[in-house]
Image (spheres, rainbow, N blue to C red):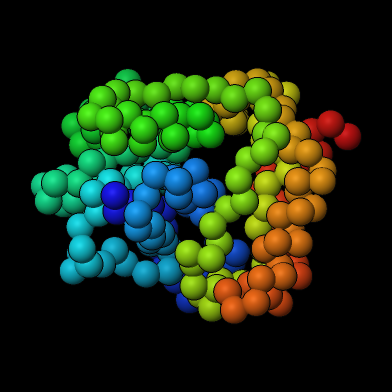
Length: 225
């Protein structure tokens, strides 16, 4: 099946000074075993190409500030026959409050995706897709390396992005992390983090070869200090 993953954003003159958001490349790694064709559309660097072939499955990571943008694209793709899967903060935290989510989405991944995304795609292929999947994880061991190769490295800063930890053990009233993942703090094995850094910065021909600056896409990297 043809899968496109869409991440929200708005192009601007300073966009090339920023690294790519890790969510879409990471989702692509989870979806890859189920997809015959796989693409990422980062709306922060380019608008959605409605002239391209319509994906069989369109996966959207949603944020509260940019859900209008996601909704507009998802609505068109749904009318063209795409299966729409939402995930991310807005779909998770506003599922019961924003009627547009249930209106458009064939499926919503609530919270973490490591178990839920493979389950949803497996069920879709078997003709048994559920309306929601909520499958928390208790370990980051063995998470796949993100598919940064699906992005055009020329459109981003010279930074490689990886994840070392997820979540936060604190209970700050102003923060949504505990509502997304639960009040937990997961650590990825150090050797796996190092292996991904070496992998992402040493592949010739993919444009990330000189990306020796590494940014950790962690919620609270100092949580256990």
